[in-house]
Length: 241
Image: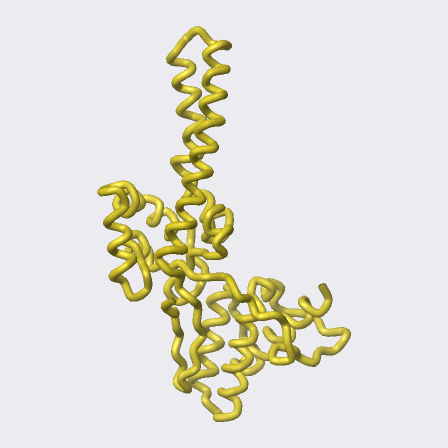
C-alpha cells in the first residue's frame, strides 16, 4: 500500500495510507448495490404512480425526479460526509487533498464531473488504468482535483505518547482540534518533540503550517506555543469525553 508523505527536514513523515485498487473497487460496488436497491424502490413507486395518474408523461417526469439523487449521489455524499460515500464509509476510506488536508466542495465537483471519463466510458477501464499506473493511486478525476483516497483504518488509541498534563481550569483556544485523530496527534507530538530536541525551527514551522491548514486556524502564537496549545486543547477535549 502506498503512503502519502510529508517529509520534514529531519526525515519525519506525517503519512497517510493510500488505499489499494481493490478497496476502491469494493467501495464502488457497495454504492452500486445501493443503486440497484434504490432503482427497485423507484420501480415500485412508478408502478403505483401508473395507477394514480393516467398521464404517462406525468409519471415519466416524476420518475426522472426520483432518479436525480442517483445522478448526483457521489457529489452530495462527498460534500456532506467529508469525502465519503456509503461505500467508502463501509471500507473506511475517504477523499482528501494530496497533502492530506480536507478536500473542498469544488474538488468534489471536479471528481463528479470526470466520473464520466473514469467510470462510464469504456466500462471504467480509463479510471482503472489511471489508478494502477499512478504512484498515488489516482484516477483522472483525482489528478485534476489534486486528491487521493486514503485509509482511515487503524486509528491509534490514546496512549502516553499523546497525553499532556493540563490544568483543571485550562481554557481551550482551538475548538475544532477534535477534527484530529489520536494518530494525527501522536504524529504531531513526535515531530514536535524531535524538532525541539534538535532546535530544528524549520521542521517546527512546517509542522505548524500543516496543522493550521488542517484545522483552518490562523493564530498569532509562536510556532512552539501554537503546537503546544493544540496538543493541550486536544487532550482537554478527549480526556473530558
